[in-house]
Length: 96
Image (cartoon, rainbow, N blue to C red; front, side):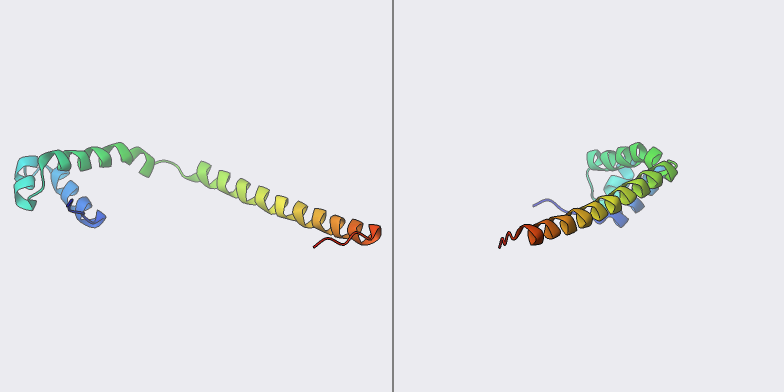
């Protein structure tokens, strides 16, 4: 059975590796975690840094535009539903 580690623990261990006060082998021995797994965690952190430090304004703008579009579409659905109900009433069509 694979052992699962909490993200807080992984972050603590990777920070210890990045400080370079001990080698990966020493950290591996200290926490009894295979070196290849520690290297994978370190690589994941380093590759993810640019996204963490990216400017989120562009993403936030896209989210706001999407939300506005969704609201507009809901309004159109409401209008079309009202028109459909009016047409059903006027034509005498009763659907269930």
